[in-house]
Image 1 (tube, chains in turn purple, cyan):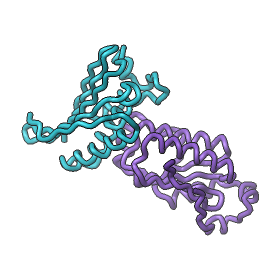
Image 2 (cartoon, each protein chain N blue to C red):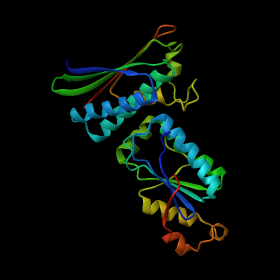
Image 3 (cartoon, one colour):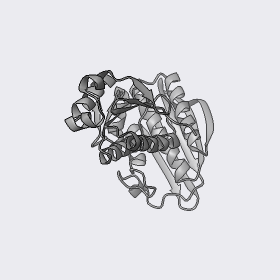
Amino acid sequence: MEHIPILRMGPFLLVTIQVDMHDQLAMTLQDDLTNRISETGAKGVLIDISSLEMVDSFIGRMIGNIAGMSRVLDANTVVVGMQPAVAITLVELGLSLKGVKTALNVEKGMELLRKSLTESDIEEVGLDREETRNHGLTVCH
Amino acid sequence: MTVRKQEIMALRSVIDVSAARQKVRSWATELRFSIVDQTKIVTAASELARNTLIYGKGGTMRLEALESNAKRGLRLIFEDQGPGIPDISQALQDGFTTGGGLGMGLGGSKRLVSEFEIDSKPGEGTRIAVTKWC
């Protein structure tokens, strides 16, 4: 089965969507991410949609679901890199991604996730802030 | 109004919905739509193609490249022989769904295009035609 790769970076999970996602692939990503959060105890999820040329109601719902599920599993979600034309279309379509944190790019998104870490989170994942910042990438899938 | 080019494609699976999006994108690019207009028509196509698949139990999308008084346009016609829509005005309301979705597809698509026509007969099927002019 087709999967979108999920990268682990310290206490965070990173997803870059680089393909036109069909509905089944979006559902698979939602399940995979939820499982990875639960397995790894990740404290944050960053979803980079800068390559997505369109977000329709189905993908919008998937993003909302991921944010909701991670919240329940004690992780924050940030969606980054939305193209301006996609943002205009999404709002006109009637979706505003309520309850989903967004940032302009990966760097700002990571900063947002880092700031949301509590002292006990840092202790729990066994990293100090500097290490968190410089932690190498580990491929989960 | 002249139809410059036309093509019809089947919508039988989620892969076809994805292929429909890509086809609409390439036609809109060829018609020199702005990036925002391209994104709007592709997003509307995605919503309507998915509706044809899920509610219409599959069907077709027909693309037409239009020209009228030096204006360029793209018309998309979605047809199915599914169960039809019993109450069209209800189906167009934001938030109304019978399929467990967000209920933004039909009303939302209408806002993204220049012209929107819907014909549906219970038991016979649904035909939705949308046009985007640039």
